[in-house]
Amino acid sequence: MRFDDGGPFAGARLSSVTPDDCAELFVLQRCCWAQEALVNDTLDIPALHESLEDVREWTKTWSTWIVRLGPRLIGAVRGQLDGDAWEIGRLMVAPDLAGRGLGRRLLAHAERQAPVEARRYTLFTGARSARNIAMYERAGYRLTTSSGAVRGAVHLVKDR
Image 1 (cartoon, one colour):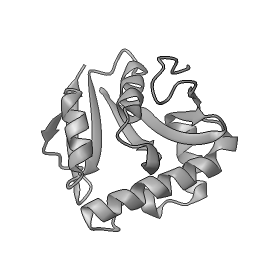
Image 2: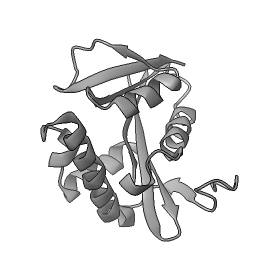
Image 3: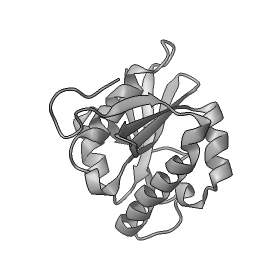
Image 4: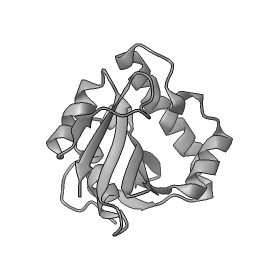
């Protein structure tokens, strides 16, 4: 998929992740969640504690898409069916490109990839990540309470 709308990501390519992408994906993940650690004033973020091997393993069980602009990996998102919920996670955009709409596009793409049996979309973000929460709420998500929530995170859900 190409973003040929003439916007800031014209010519960017969306594709499924391959094993060759995992090292760059690992670096992008660290960059993005370091920013989240600062915003949320905590290092207790699971994505910061994953190894390259962990990233390689979850790309085998999650549907994962990446975006490249030229040779550079600039964004990614993953999705996985959990019961009747399509769990969206690891939505990341290179920090220097944040705020330009790529996150919204990745979220919409992940939603479109949900299998037919998914009745809702679900995701987590940092409790102090106001920018992320605002984006998700604009996309129709609502904050919920969840017994499975990660400490310091909020759970959001959207009916399909």
